[in-house]
Length: 301
Image 1 (cartoon, rainbow, N blue to C red):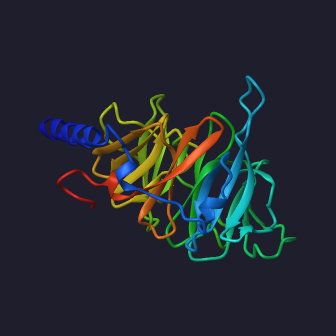
Image 2: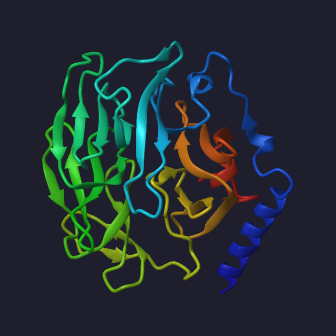
Image 3: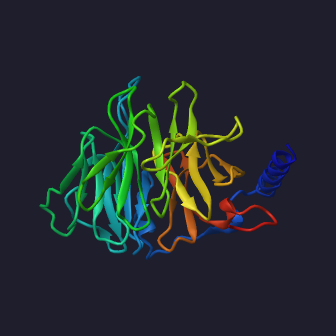
């Protein structure tokens, strides 16, 4: 009980320190040569490559009163402008750079997961890894595995695919429905939200083991955004309703920035991109990672 009170006090202290300007003191300017400067105001950043290039998407409004998929008109942005490639201008569900390679993963509007190995070949169709795939996509730091969910409601199931070979394994097949999976950087574990008993909660999943429910306070916010959580300094950073939150892997809620969404890690890993709604689109702020993952007086882990 004392530990929970201390965690709440730490969180209150952090939020209080951010009351006047939550990210102003740690936000960075976007230079004219940065590909970010070429992002249209109505586009969101889906991913940033190690070279600083962007996958961006213009959100296409769904029909009124529908539960249609969130579609994005996809562009690949470099410091010199838009790069021509297979999916340039296509409507997709999601796209991600594959670490330590030139490949890109694309989740098409038909829910096919496709790997493009040679983006410079504009006619390349890509390799289909799976079908009936739901985002978000989460990739380990070595670019070996991607995790996602697959299937039809209400039986969404957690799947891990080896990117290079397209071999797949259904992880925790009894843990349904499952959504918003996040693979650890070393691929040793997957954190996923599931509600096998009717109450959504985080679960820890390792291959060959029974899934374990993560014992967290009932008020802990769960991921709700279209992007996978980031794993940064022993913390999960993710969108939950109208905020970006940071949850330590020790179960401590470390920060909550209201009015922000869609966190993405910068090319050098030192900053986090946060989207903020504007009248005609979204602005992007670059925030020091320590602002979200460090506990005051303790520092990042």
